[in-house]
Length: 104
Image (cartoon, rainbow, N blue to C red; front, side, top):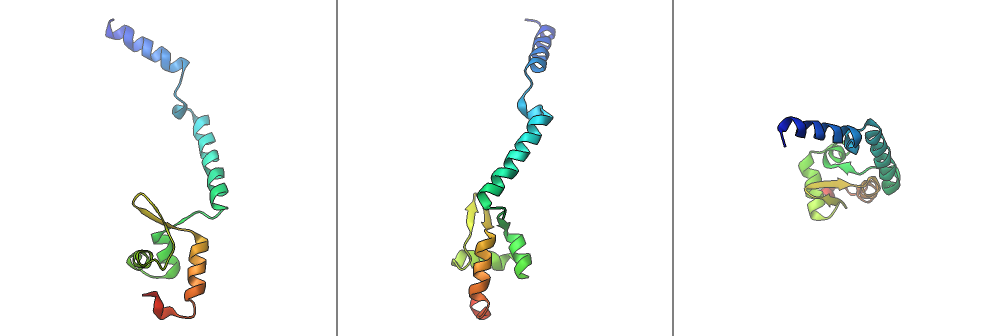
């Protein structure tokens, strides 16, 4: 088959059956589904990154990593990323509010 005919066939196939990821409607739908699934799973509270937790606690990121490694701050590891649930951070703060020396 000649290259010109092949490219015409491929173009016709793409036009008659576009990939869903190329469609604006699909992108909007997948974003809406992702947002609703995220709210359903997290109850509206998205997991916090180490950087966000460090900013809340006003400490460096290494301190947050150290707290997670010691088991003092509950966390979830997603591949190489550590995420902390806001409820776990609140609990950590309540427990350690009276005894700040035990943080490190």
